[in-house]
Length: 114
Length: 112
Image (cartoon, rainbow over all chains, first blue to last red; front, side, top):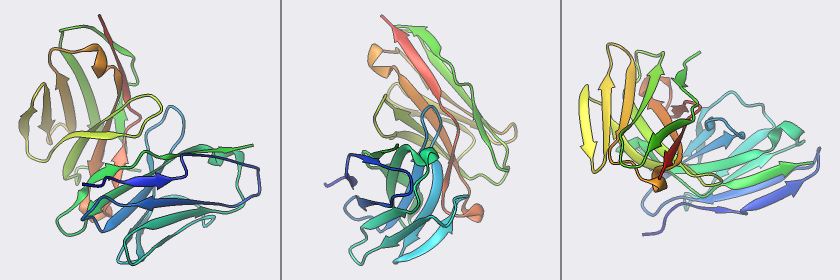
């Protein structure tokens, strides 16, 4: 049973650049949620994708955008990177209608902005 | 602002003892409650969830929920050094969107 996968594992970018992170959900899951976890803090909800649409959004600026593909995989894009965007970006998958709430996390992508 | 509060710790417990972690939440509409374990540099791992008042046991872990008092706790019995990690409490409220709201986590240190 394939778990949630994310790529890349680590990424270093410069302020002002753009970045794309990728996520493949757990086998059988159709919903992907993205979270940002700054050092020493709990994960903060960015947004959630289901049926290729953004369904919910947290308190993040429009610089953060995403996409979900027909195979349920998802991308997170961040434009005009700021130093404060340095964090662990987590993707979580779940099954809509049955257990939106039972979310399983991928290994994360560590983004460093210099 | 819906909040989930946890003591940041560290909570230091001797090996074999019971570790008791607490979490309070502000939104009475919260429906489901989750405990995740996160080792340093790793992603959160779901330990267990609870949505009814009372206790729920799974191996060495027991989750306790009291909706009237708006708190949820996690007990770790027979604590092992491998239990040393940060424990994240999360709440889910379907009416507020299908997302988890996390506390800041409690760091647990089990000493041999």
